[in-house]
View 1: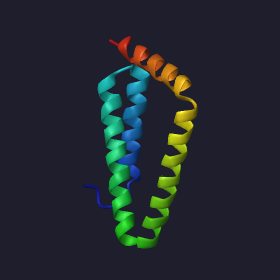
View 2 (view 1 turned 180 degrees about the vertical axis):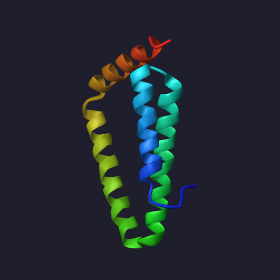
View 3 (view 1 turned 180 degrees about the horizontal axis):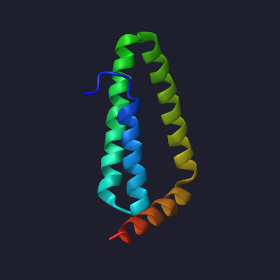
View 4 (view 1 turned 30 degrees about the horizontal axis):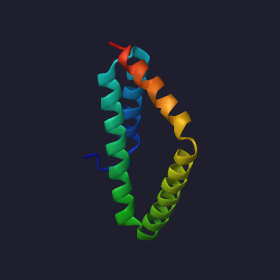
Length: 95
């Protein structure tokens, strides 16, 4: 629970992600991703309590982004399925 701005924990998460991708080690990739997402969520909670209006703007933008992603996904379902299957095969070959 880092009380300052989340730059240091965010950088640690990104470093672990880079190490995981570079060394093809899933543990570093998963730990880095989880660390980065938890830090981002924690900072979003801190910002929402400090600046309530900003919370509504971020929520509105995230909602619009999720709607756009869902609409794009429906239009490109076969392309996304191919990409996901490719990445699943790549992750299976890491072992």
